[in-house]
Image (cartoon, rainbow, N blue to C red):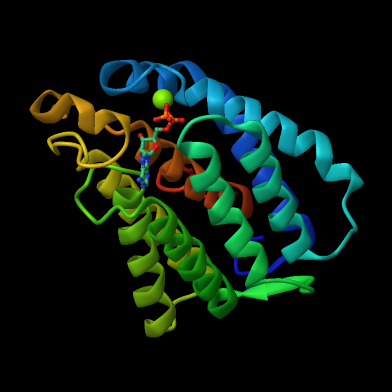
Length: 223
Ligand code: ADP
Ligand code: MG
């Protein structure tokens, strides 16, 4: 859907499915990252949650984007143990609240919904930028989307910049000392490892861009 200016209900469902597939493909990697600074369950947690999410997708009332996101959020809260369940659950619940009743959303809607979703994680987890959490991918992504929306670039370019910012934020968690979550128990020893939650958050945004516009960065021009 290159050149598209809005995201449809089907696009949203495709994003959720793509994220579930990405989490499944990266399950061992996410768990390995969590074994270095946590309790080696992040990939397992996210995969369990996203499998439950996609099992429930076909039963949803069609065409309501907000209802779909709220269902994702509630399912994650109820099926994922650990910090990431309530945090990602809140992300999707807030995203859904901002898009309730909509059957398509444009760049301003997505920007507003991402704001609300990230703010929900901040309210619940009380983490700040630089604490070595998923927010270190999500905050720069949110800011990049804002800047792109304001400068009036097309949706595809806006998402490419958003994913790039998330990736840089994810990579930049490596030298950080964790100040929130289980990794903070390690103190200085948490430095030198990439944060698992920042990694899954990057995968979440990348799944959107890849699904809607084709793989970011690496794709050959068509034709
Ligand atoms: P648990 O730490 O309970 O085992 P997971 O392993 O599934 O849960 O998720 C760990 C991830 O959760 C971390 O890598 C971090 O990104 C994120 N996280 C932990 N605490 C917070 C918090 N307070 N705010 C934001 N993200 C957090
Ligand atoms: Mg863990």
